Image 1 (tube, rainbow, N blue to C red):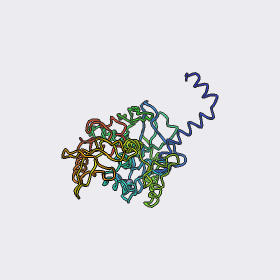
Image 2: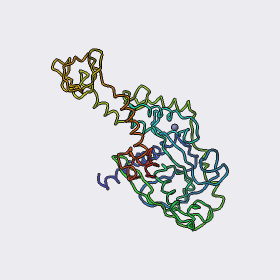
Image 3: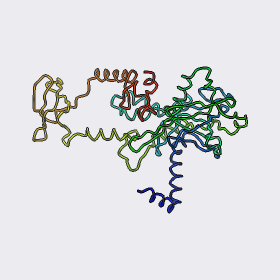
Image 4: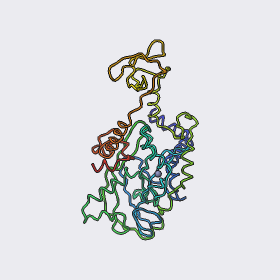
Length: 379
Ligand SMILES: [Zn+2]
């Protein structure tokens, strides 16, 4: 569509455009609405383009449960963890375990899956709690919006902020960036990333600019107590939401526990779907002969569709009736070995996003919410 036509359409359907914009915004914040409350008159800040915003992060008086600051202290962020894609609306819910040390049903469910060698690795990954942060910010180019609330993945901003502070010299004083007096304005370098239809903005650099003016204590009254707004569900309530996951269009895509499977696993299942006979060439099978189990591989399905040619591991070949075939189970030992190997890889060097562990840190979309990000970054 030409730009002109687009403009015309925009004018002609102003109400639609407005509604669409509102929907997009609400949709965006809707993601967060189940994990924190937005005080009525507070606006949400978000990265919308690659232009470098200049933000003043304003401290607030800490409430209950902040992992990095005591109640009553002035501090500048609230870290919390969410499980994404939970419930009917596939929204995010605060993980009580990682956030406040209370038991969490999705975490328990995930722990069980991790012990199951047959479990879907994508699902395990998807269920991992993701680290996020809340800030009170003033957009110095748009001060009229007042102190806004900014909620963002730790991996898209906070991590870079932490790193820049860590790497600064002590006499820079960057760690006092949020102080009302002699604080710093943060100039953020932003990059947009794309993958498929999805796009997102990552803060890739933070420059600390001395603020032109100090803030009065009054500004503290305009801030939100970030610890008070988190919505942390009780164990049973979260369990109910988690297990009631339903998707009317896609009823069959759930396993018996009601968890929606990822598309990838669906595809995998389809590929592995056996032929009508139940057996196909390449299947590993076990045949019981004279009370002893012999393992082998199907090399041919016989024309009668009732038997298969099996090449046994000892080199012998035989026609075996389907009725006498049993699917070979992975030997217990090798299963265990494989798991141990995976675990080792997970710790030492497997990138769940398909990149190079220890090298592609933050290069992939997956990095934003990677379960092994810290290990990868350390490596
Ligand atoms: Zn959890």
